[in-house]
Image (cartoon, one colour):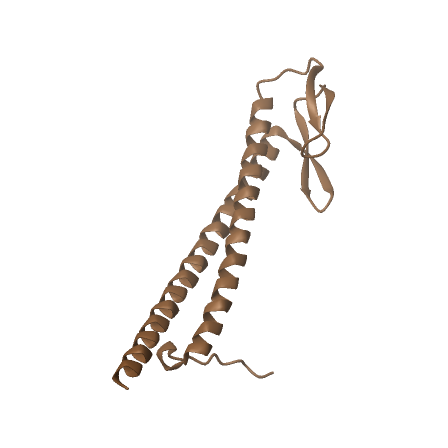
Length: 154
């Protein structure tokens, strides 16, 4: 099993076409990372909403209160709230688990914290890629100016 060694290249040693290629790759990576960041923010908001919804049940009484039950993101049907001590929690990939209100709140808060930690790591990666992109653009501008200056001397 051979270990891969990363080769470090000084960006000032690259020619303009190579710099353009690196710039394009960085822009694509940044676009993908930014989209992923947005999706993670959405997931974090959903976990937070779920925790808030479970918390709001703690003050309810099991008196067959009428509620709206979501079937899809835009379709709700009327339902009756008959047990406020336990809830069904979607734990992912089509699996559901019955939990107490405190257990469900804890589950959603844990998920929200996990996503938050991943968002922080992703933000660091995005910041690093943006710095690299700025450095590439600066070197490209310098090389273009050098070429223009050389052309002006000729």
